[in-house]
Length: 252
Image (cartoon, rainbow, N blue to C red; front, side):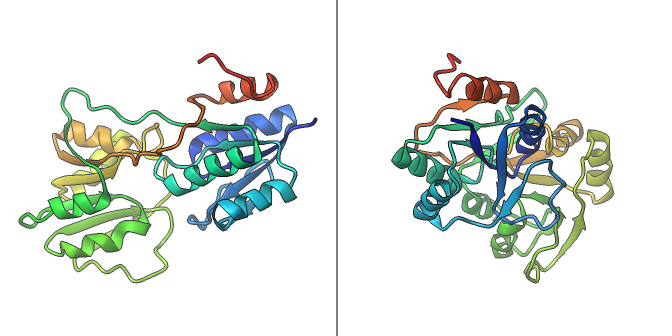
């Protein structure tokens, strides 16, 4: 049976996978949640928007005759990943997750780990600081509970609502950014503290490297637990191996 692949996208890894899949001529579609307005051009067809939970995803997989699913979503897109496991288990459709390793603290890092956005907000019950907030636009409003700080925001797209922070500046830019770029940014805004999700990978790492170089403390928000069993790989080549070998055990 020819492969008809659904790629749950939203990461650099998904973009790299899309190019490889297109190059080898596998039929596939990229699915985006729709949280980023300015999507990069892709060599594969795209669909945008949610599925409507597990039932909606099951309906889409069946109606589109999907044979395989690749979860290449953001490490914090926990609900979508859970839905993918549940839908593929129910339909007995092979599922593979293309994941990026989390960042690991190195010598010179000063990290305080938090298990949630709410915990990070609570930690910020401290005297006023100049904070770079790198948590995505969906969570900005939660930090309004700590209005004493100055917040520097760097976003791919402007928020669809008025930012509820009292003292902030937002920079709309997609990147990519270098460590040198972010050292200059942190210094120009006199940033004293970085709040970041542990997204992992290389695409958003520059701010972490810059904070290390400047000796700045980082509030690092840990990835949510998936609470689902699934097969995972770390590299696009492993996805192609999985597809070409009938989605059998990778032995990795």
